[in-house]
Each structure stands twice: as C-alpha cells, then as structure tokens.
Length: 289
Ligand SMILES: Nc1ncnc2c1ncn2[C@@H]1O[C@H](COP(=O)(O)OP(=O)(O)OP(=O)(O)O)[C@@H](O)[C@H]1O
Ligand SMILES: [Mg+2]
Image (tube, rainbow, N blue to C red):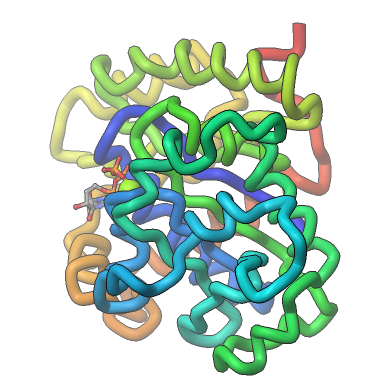
C-alpha cells in the first residue's frame, strides 16, 4: 500500500479536489483506494458522504487519539471508520473536532507517530473485519493499493502526522507568484520530518492545478515553477474546469456527472504518472542533502 499525502499549507490550491478526483481515477483504473479526510474543514467528507458527521459519530480523530491503546471496544483502527463511496473507493471521514487535536493527544511520547501506527495497521489488514459490516468493498488483495490523505492548509501537528505516516507527498500548487512562495517552507518541514521522524518520506511531485489558459501569466508561472523545481513538477497539469467545481458542489464524481469532460482523462493520466514515479522511485526531492 502506497500512502500519499496531499499537502500545501496554502489554502484553496486544490488539495481536496485532487484527493477526491485522483482517488476516484485510481479506483476507476482498478485499484483499491482509501481516502482519509484529515482536515477539520471536512470538505472531502461533505463531498463523499453528502453531510457532516453528527457530534456522536466517530471520525479519524478517535483513531488517532486511541492509537497504541489496547484493542478493545474503545479502540478505533482506521478500518473501523471506513465508509464506502462507490466502486473501489472507501474513505475515512473527518470531524470539526479534529482542530482540537493538540489538546486531545496531550503529551503522549508517541505523539508524532499516532497516524503512522494506524497506517501500519491498515497495511496489515488490522480491523478489516469491520469493512464488511460497513458495506465497504473488501480490497481484493487483502490490503488497499493506495491510501490518500487530504491535509488541512497548515504545517501544524495534523500535517506533521500525515507526513510522518506517508511514503510520498503530492503538492498541488497554483502557478502564481504568491502561491509558490510557501513551497520553500513546505520543503523545509519535509526535510525536518525526514531527519527526525520518517527517513523514507519524499516529495513525489508538485501538481500545477487550476490553470486558466486565458490568464496571460499562466505560462510564465508554469515556466517559473519548472525552472525552480525541474522534474519535481508533474508533467500532468490540471486546468481550470467548471465541471470540477460542479462535482465538488453536488457531491458527485466526474465519471457520473461529466464523463465526456477532458478532466476525466487528465486525472487518469495523473494517476498513471504517479504510478510510474512510484515504480521508478527516483528521488527528486530537493531535500536529499
Ligand atoms: N482544476 C480546477 N478547476 C476549477 N476549480 C477548481 C480546480 N481545482 C480546485 N478548484 C476549486 O478551487 C476551490 C479550492 O479547491 P480545494 O478545496 O480543492 O482546495 P484545498 O487546497 O483543499 O483548500 P483548503 O486548503 O481550504 O483545504 C474549490 O472551490 C474547488 O472547486
Ligand atoms: Mg481542502
């Protein structure tokens, strides 16, 4: 199972959109995919579940704060939280309470590793007996092929949990000057996590998103991004498309709502480029030194 976190501390760059559309494309290509909503804004949850969680419903928060505890009734392996969302795609919902995580996990010594521990369990199929009861699809090989984590727009504890728990990072970016300014800080945080918490973590690629060809600055911005980060930038770029806004607004998928949109093929191409990068595993991260 490859665990990929969608990160960028800048808001509104397309982390949630990419998480959901990429997860759907990977599932459509025949992979077993789990998407974890790790954002207290719950945008992926609202999109995929069609509603917010009630205050008494468990979310990824319960899984994180009970990680490492005895496997009893009060224990929440991620698999116990899975909700089905169409063929091949399952997800774990978030709750607004996730914003209180700092207080909830207190000073546990294993503090940065809690989500990582839960992901390790997923790799081993721990808690999968709950999947059937939830109506989720059972991954054919006994494990998910991909676990995507939709992160909030910060570099706080939640995002450090996600980077520590992941194999690779995907960074959606808007190619205007302002959006690129925060990338250095993200690279620095990744470097710190790599040094102290997860020596395997790599930035798999920067994904130019929301390109509006009518805006004259786009090509210039894309060139500047490629000049600065070279082949760390994915070859695939996602253009601005009204259909993409519509599917998140209506809580549906491109396959159902706009199967003839070029966005369908673009996300499938992105999925294939990601798989190819994972297979060739050249470390492009500007953090190797
Ligand atoms: N390629 C695209 N074409 C058109 N609209 C897009 C595209 N990508 C994202 N958007 C829109 O941009 C807005 C922000 O996208 P999204 O919510 O995915 O960003 P985010 O990085 O997850 O935001 P946050 O940091 O708040 O979690 C949404 O309204 C979304 O529909
Ligand atoms: Mg989001």
